[in-house]
Length: 82
Image 1 (cartoon, rainbow, N blue to C red):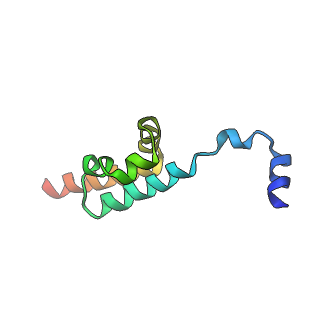
Image 2 (cartoon, rainbow, N blue to C red):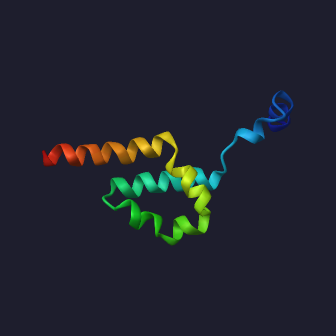
């Protein structure tokens, strides 16, 4: 019943929702990167390729939380080398 109420409240809200597969892959990329894997290795995983098209992977990599997680790790790595 709550779903019907949500649709009636904003009938076009579905246009702005991200696919769940992108959400899952974003979490996977961040988790695997934090465990020490390179981004290239992660993107070559069958897990990522089976759940997202190349266009969807591009959108996942543009997500602020993914950029922040990857960027923070890279910045920390460069700081430790200086």
